[in-house]
Length: 394
Ligand code: SAH
Ligand code: SF4
Image 1: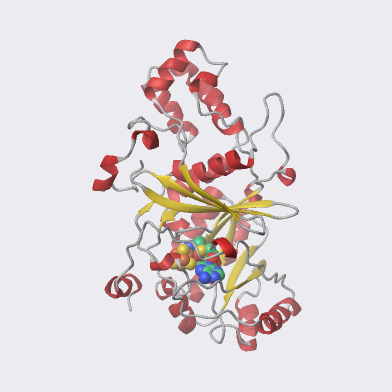
Image 2: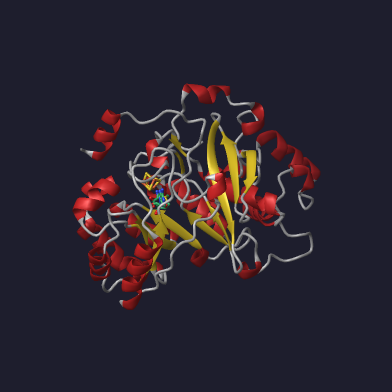
């Protein structure tokens, strides 16, 4: 558990299998943290770096969770590790497979909380949509997760653990004696931080987990294949470039402050002008190719020709692609999806201005796995009107 995860009373009854009876979890530790932990457990300082390298490779390259199988470590050392640490990932509670092949996993984490992970297979890639928080403190009015209270931040272990359980299910740990496949031939080749939660409100854990995903001696995903999506936490954007260096997606969704204030209330704190300023320097600092502007198509709200023209003007000069997302409905949602004709016209305007403007095909709708539909059934607490007002300053 990290400092960002406050201990709540229900965490005191964590079942043993989730936590290894309270032993520290090696999963989610940075290399430095693992080294310190091994030294504290009696590993001679001179050997610690090498031991980290060996254990790291077992956990993140081979997918091994049982210390007994770490056969290049001495028997006594394996026994010491087993008494002192665990290698634990979230527990898969349910697994659903959509007609289109999309997989949705509901996993349980410490405290009995649940989060969802979505795997989206495509012809040239397989993308895992990872959650960063249980619920979300923000209240974007079109987002199902936004109606759910924030329960807590996920730890780095719980974030990288989502990647590990998906690799388990896809059978994608390499066979002994083989090498890790090149990114493009992998089933899980891309990660998007677009599940539940605002990743930049859980910066350190997200950063540590993504560093593990990119580490060349483990899961080995290129930083170009990892995309972090934010609703616009402006002060953390430069840090994302400097400390993670992954690709960036912005939940843009509107072209005036008036409309964006309603759709993405964090806009009241950091309005469009501030957000665009922060974005202008991102690609230079992170070497990222282009910023993805996500734009949800809401009937009669943000989908006019004027909006499309304003959008291309606003982002002028930023290397960008615009991802149009047909609104995914959820029970009680206050919006409707724009018609296909409207979306096509909007896309044409953006395209004619020189931007790539793919329309995202909704995936996994039959299992409520599409963007913005995630919400854990166990977290029934809904935000009260007063709470929403307090958070959004309305
Ligand atoms: N909190 C982060 C990441 C999670 S949301 C963020 O807001 O960027 C992932 C994407 O799905 C965001 O672009 C979000 O705006 C979009 N989204 C949320 N609800 C949606 C819905 N009902 N239909 C379509 N897209 C939605
Ligand atoms: Fe939170 Fe993102 Fe949903 Fe907004 S769109 S409520 S930031 S998860």
